[in-house]
Length: 125
Length: 182
Image (cartoon, rainbow over all chains, first blue to last red; front, side):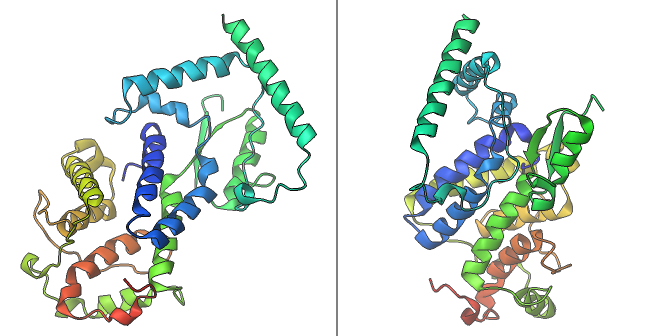
């Protein structure tokens, strides 16, 4: 009913995920169908949208949660890693076969990301 | 142009496509990155439709046959609150959820801001959900005659599901329509 509220959307999405985990004990089939659909649309919950939670007034958006989001956002603002957002991710993206993945390249990318992150922290300090 | 900072859009691929999606094209034309805020209504619509398919199977044609039958039998139904079958909840976790949902729906009923922007369909959904959970809505319990039942109106699934659920004790609903047995 309040899906139009950008500030509350992330909290409600997360709550929906948690509810479906619990609902598996009651009706596993329905819960799995819902879970699968939510997984396919998980990418809409982007890192740009989540920080809007700090403007939410619902009880679940506690001051501690907002502080944690702001703290994370500070690190991101100083980061030199530019966002390369994809606007479309195929439905099977999260269940794809990774046997042929180039692990050397993945490790290299992780190392670069870590290095940039540490540089960003130093810049913030 | 510089005042445009975000895009809210239906999650169909013609909007969100990586190369030729409307969001991408607009970003290119404006020349700056925009916040992509996908419409939650459309994400949740897909969830509701998936559950509907699991329970009732695929629907053929533009209209939902169950809703067509419901619309035809509307005048014969007893719309009094005493004839309504409410949802009996026993599971401890579901009782918690019920309390949370009731609290939320009742707060919506008295929310002036919500009333000012909500459509009739939304307020009808809130009222129906309250009735199913055994609570009389603040403005009184009433049922609304079915209107448009085509599949493009996704709110119809929520509205008429609940109304059919309320009237199912009157023995009009054939249980064989259910694909997934309880």
